[in-house]
Image (cartoon, rainbow, N blue to C red; front, side, top):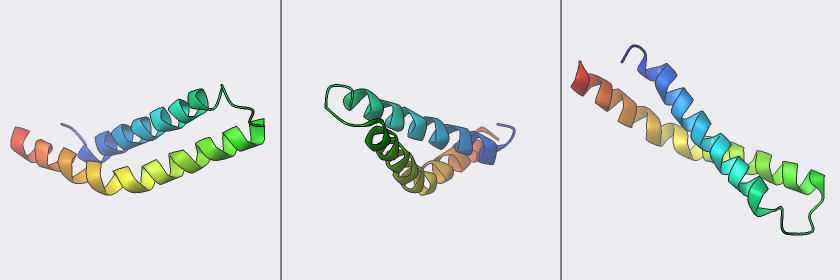
Length: 68
């Protein structure tokens, strides 16, 4: 692995975007306004980033050390 920090950021950002996208899909069936849907998706994205950062970074760094 070239740069574990960049790889970590790509992983947790991608997973957070996926979670926000799933939230948007889940709210398609309800009668929610666009503001509520976008605000909820932003909230899910931010919380996912906060939760995933400290989890993903050590895992990727550990795998980078093993592969080195």
